[in-house]
Length: 356
Image (cartoon, rainbow, N blue to C red):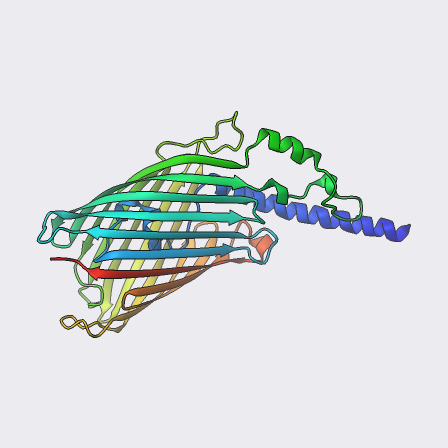
């Protein structure tokens, strides 16, 4: 009898501890779910950041993908991915500007199939050439979003038989819950943005005189879509204001510094990320023959205010670029996660020479 009581108390404590963890993470996830997913390597997910960056490349095409995994050691992991393709449509001998067109797919998943989101966007941008490598860009995007919840994978208190979880027991709460809430939600999403960029030198021509600057503003979710899973309720997704900028300036031959900043405000939530990276030219590409490909390595650290410290590494060789970063939680969930945030990997490929 004492053993049964002890075992029941242990299971009860274990259940309460697990429930507390789920509640803490669920609050964090519900806030994130009401907001947008964000990649730490925001400059490597251009189409997600600002539609005016569509086609803002020195080649004809670009393929890019990001993968992000958070809290993998916990029972409620979070994973996100993005894939994008954009192309620069340049008219030969055109000196006025060029058009960019792109397609992107974004998705995330929280927990064991609990919360998921998938989005596909089509974006369009025009890059007006002000002078030389001085451009002003304007772009917009339109997309379709699907958000879903898998209620079947949830465990309810009524399914605990006093000793352990028993999935064969009915969940009266689930039966009433699914009558009120839908499992899938579809809605349209729109946004627009502008960007200004100036480049003085070519990609691999790092010198002390090297200088590049980029700054943009975007307004996302301008239609404020209803994201509620309950059909009789209205829960508008707030518009999101984004400001991003970076400067690339040379310190010496082959070495340059890149400070960056990202400001986002969506509803009552403000997110600020800033940091600095050092870029080292390992091998300069052949300017005239094109037989020798260049190689660049970048090391940096970013800080997302009130959330995470993010060390970052990137290698660029020929047409390929690989980036790796890791979020170290310094606030919020740090007590639950022991400071363990998550890894993020980015991969991009560019191809095609632009007609002059």
